[in-house]
Image (tube, rainbow, N blue to C red; front, side):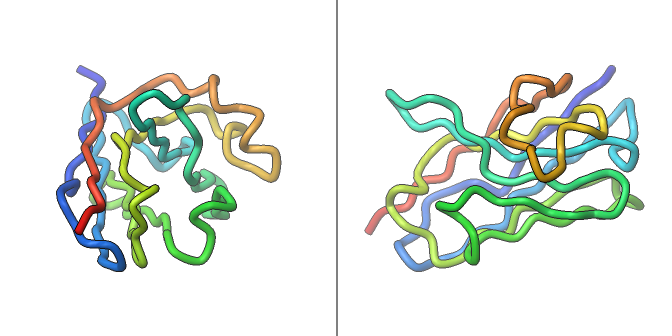
Length: 128
C-alpha cells in the first residue's frame, strides 16, 4: 500500500518551533519531488515548500522563507519540515505530497496539482 504519513503537529506558542515528518511506505521518496502544503479553515491550499529529487534543491513560499527548512533522509524514506519563529498565521493543516521529479524546481508553484500521493495531514496551531 502506497502511503504518506505526517506527524509532528501540535499546539505551539508564537515564536516557537515544530518539526513535521512525512514518512513514506510502499514506495521510495528519493526519486520524487516532495512538497509540503497547508490549508487553513476557509482558505485555499497553498504550497509551503518542496525539495527536488535530483540535487535536493529547496524552494519556499515567501511567507515562510527564512523560517522553515525542508530536508530529506532517504535512508529513512522521510522528509522533514523544520518550522521556526512560528506565527499565528501559520496555523493550518499541513500535508506532504510526492510527485514526479519535475514538480519541484524554479517553477514549483505552477505544479501544485501534479502531485500523485498525499498524506492525511497534521494540524499545526500557533496560539498563545
